[in-house]
Image 1 (cartoon, rainbow, N blue to C red):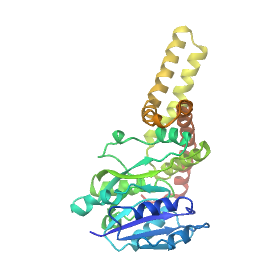
Image 2: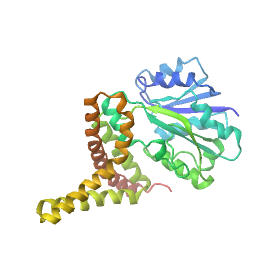
Image 3: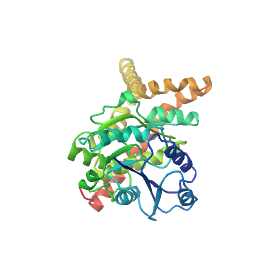
Image 4: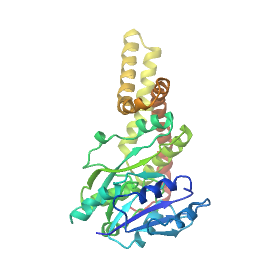
Length: 323
């Protein structure tokens, strides 16, 4: 079957060459590539229009959000099999081959979840990737909701669920995944279809990213229990433990301290396990720096989520989005 590869861009001149090079280097080239630009003011459009290694069409839609851009690109696609990625990534040479194989070989699956791995350039990015990104063994294929940076599906299925939710600016791929899975069942899983991307390079950029993600959760009414657990932990359990350590008698102090240290260890166990695998590429001093960053990144991300989620809920109450 023929395949259309789509992605959206906005001021991606710095990262776009890596993506275009990785598309050109695929073992199975797409039959067409469609990029939707949301109003770039840098050299993004010029880079796209100068690409001559594979057929590429550019849709210019100033002001379009990611959902609108993806829907425009998919609507313009000529083929039934749609492979979706993002600017800012670098695709494994066999990414397209792996992510489309279940759709081309079997009429059953309507969607294929690919995987993604960090491509860190700094110690901070190594720590960031280990803290916030799952490893392959952390994934349960039956419930995994893939990022649209590594996803493929049938155009007929996209049409059947109404496409990406254009009213939502973040977490739009989660809503699209949930609609597809509710309508058609679990996705096929292609762990070899890997998209590499750089984690956020500073705490400020990470805070902004996770604030937006949590605001998207609030707008879309996603993961309420998960957010309530976070509020309970930070606003009730943590103050109670700190009060026990500060004000309690010796047995209470020891019990509260043990509970606090045990909770921190449990919360950071996964990130440290993933970080240990990347330590071989770091000098000893940088290993210590990365290890020290893990709880800081966790804390900053949680604070960003606790601020972003109610902002999204307030937006939902005011705007009453569909669904």
